Length: 179
Image 1: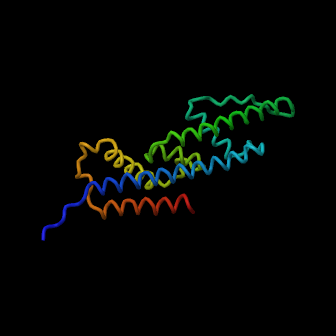
Image 2 (image 1 turned 120 degrees about the vertical axis):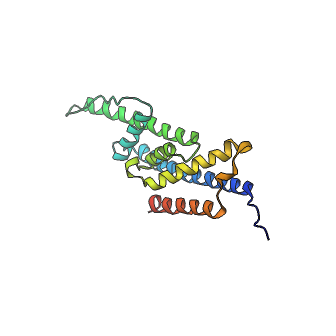
Image 3 (image 1 turned 90 degrees about the horizontal axis):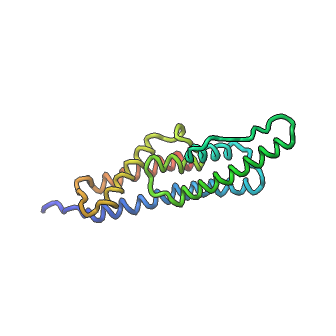
């Protein structure tokens, strides 16, 4: 009997669905981290390493220079001004994080770096194999999602290869983000 032809529509649907699930996972984890920071913010504790990291991420992404009033020393007025400025930056950084998640549209490297940074993991800490796999999966999903009318079915190698790629991504994700 002849070998059955693979159903490329099923491959494409699988890739689109799994990409959406992965994207949702990373966005949900980032929102959970922002919710935890928002709770800390509401308690008035913004001078933490997690908040300073978020503020610097925000300033870097917005291409702004940090401009703390440098309330050093024992002057209560300067310390109060410094604390108010830091609180304002923390609030802006939380808004930036929420907006980034809301506007996010993928799992490519740049998205994963920012979503992970919102969770408290910076690029030098990430599993580069996982980042590369997610980036490639995002590109492959883009081929299907944005050019399906001219999509070359040769990019689908086999159902097993598609499954193995996703299994690798899931294993690496669990090992890094769930441990």
